Image (tube, rainbow, N blue to C red; front, side, top):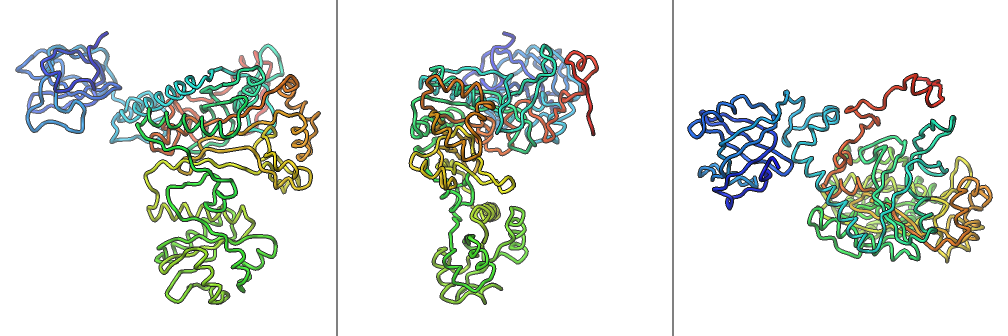
Length: 586
């Protein structure tokens, strides 16, 4: 090795040792003839000293060192002068008095600053990502991701799971996200799809008798991007035979407990809270509820029906509901504050919000003239409101009412700094099996057509599919969906019944999912699984929201890579090789 130690190893116990360090010159400071260089590697920073009275020739060489030059220094570990210690650094009590300097490589002036306290704009950071990754904070992100991945593999391996790779060039199947297509050179006019997930192949592994499968797998989806979405991403993918929902819950809770302990030394309390999909929506206005603060929603439909407020009465008459959010202590909100919340509600598909402030004698608002004093008292009691609170009302169909009010809930929590620094995990279970598509006038599967229904709800399939709950589940942390899964259908007759609701026959499904349903003829075991977004998990471990910060080489929001300038134009040679012609419209 060119070095004896890394730049984070040495402490006071090493004083007197002669050591050799290698790294990059993060900064150079000349203090009255003595030169100090902060030498950095991925482990940390060590201060090295060039004193002309100690070694004049080495000091002379150090005078020309620039930022990010690659150095090898040899010297003795000494104590820093009294009062010059840096308690914020692991190596802050010592420095290296240099006897020998070797310049391993020079560097041009970097186009971005390689310091945590200075951050370039996104375009520059991604264009020069190899320099951005030198920053200690980004090195820590990579280390945390590595530790999380290894702890996942360690835990699942101990539980008897096999890590099995599935194909990257596959046949596209309907019902999922938009996929990337890859033209085949040897089969002109034919294309592969890049997998949006290993869903079908992991189910085939269950048919194959591999009863415990996992994979840290790459997935590709040709979708519009945002802070928590990339065209290529990583999942912790799990499938297991002969299991029920409780088995998956127990396994995943143990897995996450192990990852958080190993990666960031955080204790995760198990078992996690369980919420049905309906309760999550009704209490928090979200199927990925943030449980780090209160502000729960309350249904007040029956009370609102007693009022003379036409907005409430008209919605209720059409089968809608009225929900209220008690914004505790928010009666101090100005009209401008309230208008901003109303605009947010409109952005999330509500026609608006009704509101009232809680005062000494009841509710104060322009709508209270339509609400009698007894009804006002009922509303105050039902919402647990008190003087100084602000009540916000949403009236619409259930989903629209609670979802819009749920977004208002999050906005108020941010404005009032109610979000606690905590790890609030929960399971959301009993999702509806179907949702009605008003555009097509048909029922469609909420998750996918292989998700098993609750046995007790099968009786509703023919006439009331909206009542059928599925054996689907999501794992949520701090208002972020970490992943989801389900117990799968393995029984042919149940599959026929589930397909019939969507207007699809088993024979039609066989044409679309031919190789999976063909495999199911040969003794498919009961099975289920889950997939968790690994990039998203790493971001949460790091306390950040942008998953690109947890990925070594991410794409921009436009799915471009400034580093290698991809995607690139096709050349005539490529098109000829793949038997293709371009007919693009800009």
